[in-house]
Figure 1 (cartoon, rainbow, N blue to C red):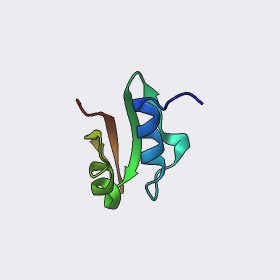
Figure 2 (cartoon, rainbow, N blue to C red):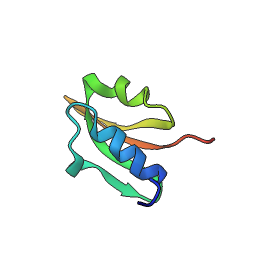
Figure 3 (cartoon, helix red, strand yellow):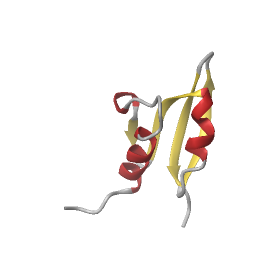
Figure 4 (spheres, rainbow, N blue to C red):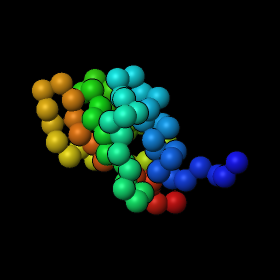
Length: 71
């Protein structure tokens, strides 16, 4: 089994957050975008090893971009 890449780790971490749908997660290079319910934004920001930026705010959710933090 090949080791998990940074973006694969982010996808798996975000998919584990309540309300995030794996089908809504998109990966381009090492950047991951997805919609996340407003009440779970802090859970995404607390995931170790990733930086989360809010791109858009909607009534019940945020569009976020997540990428690995510099090590």
